[in-house]
Length: 545
Image 1 (cartoon, helix red, strand yellow):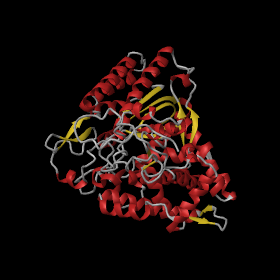
Image 2 (cartoon, rainbow, N blue to C red):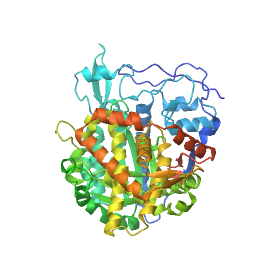
Image 3 (cartoon, rainbow, N blue to C red):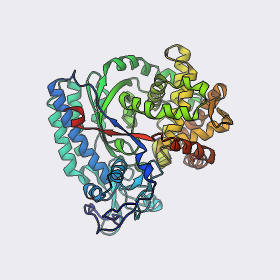
Image 4 (cartoon, rainbow, N blue to C red):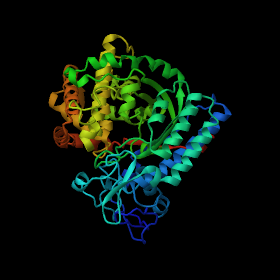
């Protein structure tokens, strides 16, 4: 037990930002002390010796801009001042856990509060008034209602309206934009220089299309930056609003060269999807590419709770249809998860005779093709009335992640058959994928990735894709696994193409849950002290900048 000298504020319903902590109160820890160590510490480093002095100075500026995204995400996730909230927590382990979770809710436990005195986390985070209902929102008529880059608030009469991010966070975004402009002056890669300037402008105008297009044109820059309001996972009410985040990365040229050939197969693989032709009529962009990176700084949404190990962007359907997407594999973070989490999970839950099929090459490829597979399928419903994301609302992210997982495995299988993938066997990819389900399902129901894995585990169980021994160990059934992959692919693609909100809601309700047998297996992983995820010791000092 510990004491925290603060308490939660009532929901914010006016235009004013909450910047002060309420009068002191006592809050106690609601979870076992042991849960505070579910994140394995990793030093986030990379070899920067090949970079010029200007490039290293540029990295420092990009990290400074990323820190601003981190502070903005805190505002979007929790309505208390970050420094005041954290400084009031005396126990360093509890404070560290709160830092990882960006507030008092456990992101890998369904966003349950881990401190007393805090209510359940609002599904809409701080994107909407806490007292707003879904019905009120859907019946109201106001500008930019489904906008990615605006906050929904109430005016003095209680009516809903939106305020663009560029206005709501004007001071912070102006500082970040100036840092990007300063960094651009140090960039010797013209495409990267142009991207930084356009991204700086986008932060101030809420128009990200030009900078997204420019980001797609970058091919040779050794330093990489992903920054801005990007993913909408934090908005669990509707999935409309984007959260601030950033990644600062250094390109692994050798690995990137090895991956370059795979994106060219997207149009062919699209045509081979196991679904009727109408559900694969959109042609993926031909300008997509694959690259490997060492990530040297995470900020904001990407750093909250479970850590992303691969990126597929931009999310803008207009860019995807014209140019495709870029897939960034975060190799150093991926290796940390494989060594510290996936291998121990396999040793605990996979039958001994299949453990030799758990390989880093398979883990890397399954993760990589997950990102590539986001480009498959369709982005707009068949009737043309909406985007898939708009039609499926808060369920869109979980279904999209499920699609990417399952179609990624379909791609691996197809490319192995064509002889384009030469590392390992199909069994390596299947067994590693199975172990990966146990890793990702531990992210919990509040995570789109966690929910997608719950659905897949329960679907695979129904299809007999794996068997469980009397000793409680799992064995992949190769033939039935292939059948299950095809069936789930067709189901997800059809639900997306039909924009079938009710069908997806039913799928999530029935299969997006952890049933008793799986819960017992996850308890075994907890008893074995296997980390759920990683957290980073990161920053200029760690990098020697």
